[in-house]
Structures are given as C-alpha cells and as structure tokens.
Length: 255
Image 1 (spheres, helix red, strand yellow):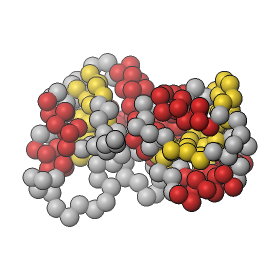
Image 2 (spheres, rainbow, N blue to C red; image 1 turned 90 degrees about the vertical axis):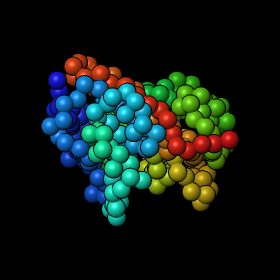
Image 3 (cartoon, rainbow, N blue to C red; image 1 turned 90 degrees about the horizontal axis):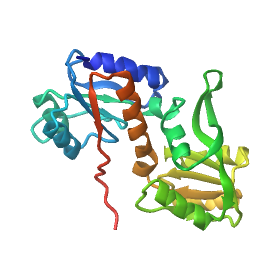
Image 4 (cartoon, rainbow, N blue to C red; image 1 turned 45 degrees about the horizontal axis):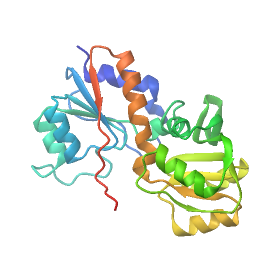
C-alpha cells in the first residue's frame, strides 16, 4: 500500500513543487507523511463538506489545488477544518501555483476544455524549462464574444460568464486560470482576440476593451476545477494500488 510521501513524489513529478511561487504554500500541509493510503479524494478546496466526504468514503488523503493552510492559524480547535483532519487521521497535499505553471497543469486543462489548439505559453516565468503562466491558442472557428461566452459557460459548466466585448470576432484566445486580470498586456502582446480568466476587476473590463481585446470572467472555481478529473486519471494510472475519487463541490453559490 502506498504512503502519503510516495503519492507526494508522484505529484512532484507531475507538477514539481519547486515551481511554487514565493507567496504560496504547497506540499504535505497536514498529516503524517508515512500514513498508508488506500483511498484519496481530489478537490479544488478542502472545506468542511470535502472533509466530511473524505470521512464518509474512508479516505486517508485529500489532494487539493488551493492550500488548506494559506494564512497563519491562530488556533486549532473543534471548529477548525485542520482539527477535524487531524482527528480523523486524514492528510492533505496541496498543489497550487506549481500545478498552475506545470506543463499539463491547470492552464493546459483549461485550454483543452475550451477546445483551443496550437497552444503556447502566455507569460514567461522560466522559458528555458517551458514554464509559463497561462496559455494562448486558437479556436477552430471564429465567433462573436456573445457566442464565445455561451460556449465557455457550457464547456466549463460555469455558473456565469461576465465579459466586455471589443466588437471583433474571436479566434485567438488567451487563458489564465484563477485570478488573471493582470494578464491583459500579455494577451495583447500575443495578438489575442480575447482573454478568459477570473476575478476580473471593473476597471480591467474597461482596460481590455481600450486595448482592443475582449475580456471574459468565467469564475475562479470553474476555471480551475477543470484540472481535477485529468489529475485523478493520471494519478490512478501511476499509483494503481490507491483508489482515487473526485469532488466538484463548491461552497460558493450563484442564482
């Protein structure tokens, strides 16, 4: 039976933890690295609901994209998610910005889900190692901003897609999972017709149109949740003695 540290090692090959950005917190954040694992749950966030799913399914490990511990903890008691994890001997590995940047990671999954082809990196982080933030690729056919918004909403199963339309057809699309409103300039340098990301500020919608590019906000959860199923398949192939399952439950609701 595999142990937590062995699963971490496989994950490190997929998305090297050395790629983690300075502000971030990744790796084995909770639990015993020598804990045997027969079942692992993958999710974007480690919330109370996800922990309960792990308990109910007898999972010994949760792999998340967003770190379970990001800001300093002032207390760990019965009201704390970390307390429940420790209480039930459940470890947590978080792969955040390293999974965003890694080839085959979140941004490649997002580009693939949108049907982009001929993809290249959007903004260089370490071009010698092929490490880029975001991707730029081509749609099979050009479409209006309204049509692209509807297509993205359907393909990402997004609650909503907000956008500003610069009134030109869209075929070359830049994507940046999560908070990528600052990538407008990079998308313009690539002569992209549109940038799809999340957490866009009001002024960024206006700035994009002024720069001659349409800007789409498909939501933080929905632009990153796309990695969970591909990662689950990859881990299942490489660690056959562990059963992997996924959860796509979000704590954020929309009406």
